[in-house]
Length: 78
View 1 (cartoon, helix red, strand yellow):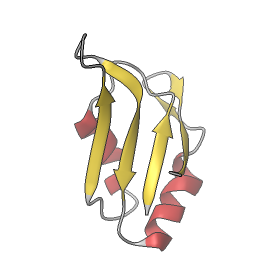
View 2 (view 1 turned 90 degrees about the vertical axis):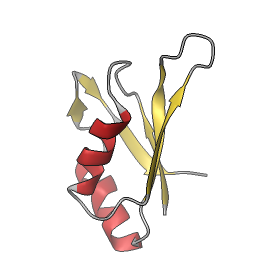
View 3 (view 1 turned 30 degrees about the horizontal axis):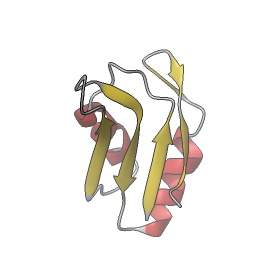
View 4 (view 1 turned 30 degrees about the vertical axis):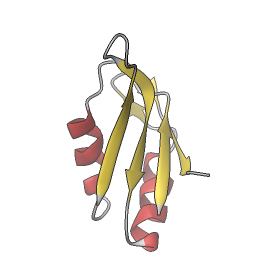
């Protein structure tokens, strides 16, 4: 299941996101979206979790939690 993680701090790293979601199950892919011109985070990422139950647990536990002072939003990617 592919998840969209929004409202990330510009300083949050891909490794931090991967670690955060790994606490709730296996993460097969984690992509922090970067601005090509500035090479800085655009504030959102995609996380792929192969187990649907683990992905739903991650959504339930991480949606609207604080990461680096920002309240992140997690949902199924469209």
